[in-house]
Image (tube, rainbow, N blue to C red; front, top):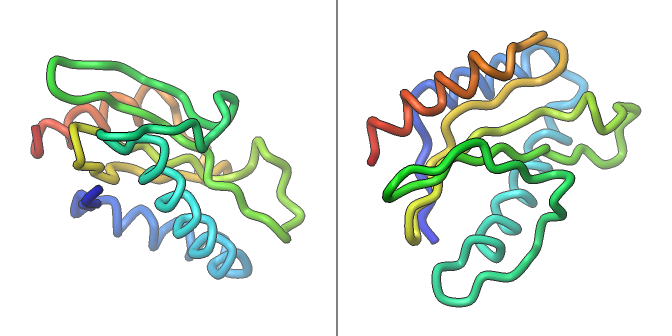
Length: 125
């Protein structure tokens, strides 16, 4: 599996970390764990369920790619699961593109972020 990041993804990640400075290490660790699980879950040759359905949500599917949203688990923090950051990504074959990331502190609108993620994915597929 190959990971790519949309240019705006890094800016959003920086914003999430800036708003929650005390959680920067937890966010970094959580993202590293999510990437490992995504490699297993979306392996094109031998996919295995690595992320439970309650944490991984299919947003939409297109002919050659699918848009997903996953909760980034932040262990060792006082945050409740509904406060964990969400990351939107697209999958096509052995390619995973990280598109958007937002946290509860940013009070984002799901529909708006879904549309932004679809637009960003069109830069790749």
